[in-house]
Image 1 (cartoon, rainbow, N blue to C red):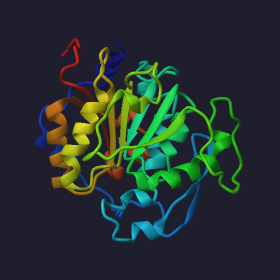
Image 2: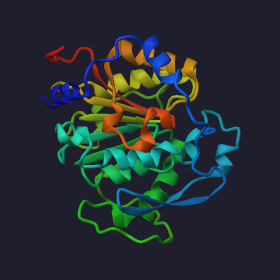
Image 3: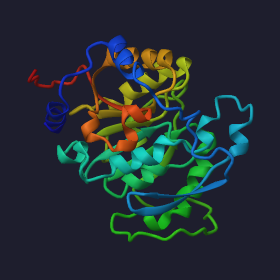
Length: 292
């Protein structure tokens, strides 16, 4: 199976959560502050995977006291780097067939930008963005703003601003509200009666609050289950707090066989000495053949 080819390529699993935390945080990590691209700008111009995007964000919500959190209100530094990396044809996820044009992908905690979904949706069959309901109007605006990019055959666009449409464009990227603490993961999240499960689960820079670790990991578990082959879970994050990270890796490792993406398979910008890391996992119930 494709996931076994990937794991053979990645090498030994993460066996000890405490050791993994020590290995990552014992090196010198450059300061990224909190990790925003620009927390004061109402819009950002970005080039990702050879195409130009305009991302609208809401600094006012970030600085508010909104119940349920506000971190998704602006774009974080890791997101465009991760989107560029995961869309690259040389990425081991593509080379081993874990990701393919037929893949269905769900993203947890996508925030207001929807950027990874917009970039990766051009290469997969279906991409479902999820987050708390408050981000939906900004997701709609960003999908509408960047509509010219949302097709596999679309040519690279130049930077421009246009008046956002009232609703997002049709296509294979969509948004569905999903609160990790309140909502149930069901096959209806795919948005299609013909598609019952996902091939990959993505979470990008969602680990910042110890109270949300268990709900996030449980949502990863629920999203990754399938009657056939369980989904691969791909977790990218900025290295900030070793205690929060260790809490997450312990909980994730309890449910998932876990690998850290080797730096030889990452862009320079995403390596641990730059302050970022990517882990991948497969549910422990998955029938994988071991070669170690």
